[in-house]
Image (cartoon, rainbow, N blue to C red):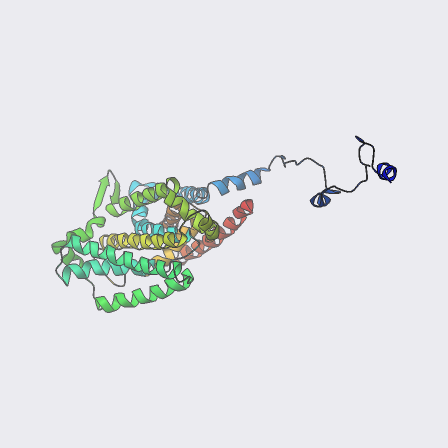
Length: 372
């Protein structure tokens, strides 16, 4: 019996046959698997692919290129008439309000949302500043603070509805646009506060309309406010944790949540800040037109979206630069003033801007293929 048992066992130290089955069950999946070492694609990229990667890493490059080309074209067509310091600074004056409202729109669109109420909030805050000064007799400085509080409240409500109640940003801000627009007319009784009265009793409200002369260049405090606002937001978005969280929420809110970002709180803070920036635009609007009018700035929401889209900021969120928004606003200003100086029909401006909007979205899709 013992001899039979011993004979059935393989000799000590011998190797198992080449075709033997794996000793463990989990090793069966390795049978027949590839033994090739992993390799990486190291082929040289074509010039177009290199350019595509460059644009993907520098979202503001496209609008900057378009801006330089458009300035050069109108400079050739108009010569010194266009390249004068007065004309170039006039473009900055014309886009100051669009640039400020566009900054508010940029923050929202970076989160893959959209805010259709920015223009209405801007006008309402300007009306609140004027009415609190002339109807209730508050000091202009306090009235300005009330206007900022009104803008922050409107943005906060938008943020709560989007973040807490999970309503689509388009629907929320569309409804808020109608509500704020109606409230604006009802509260102001559709009355305009004249420029002469503001100059005499509350010149602080017209602060951003005052001029700064540098030779032949004429700037306003509104232009200075726009440039400083864009510079501050550029730093915040690129060099602070809050700014990185904005991009993270827009790129993938679920991944941002898993990474420890409080997405709901971020959205509320972004919409609230957007409302505050709209209040700054409302104060600038008073300085720009000189009066407080409930009918002013009706197309600011569309103009801000135009600047953002032409500026290369993705409507899908998570990609873009606020500098691109500023370049987009300047492109619109250059086309508007340049075509006016050439003497063409104003409708050509809208036609070309429409072409630019569609082209910008198409380029954004082409650039996004790099990430895909």
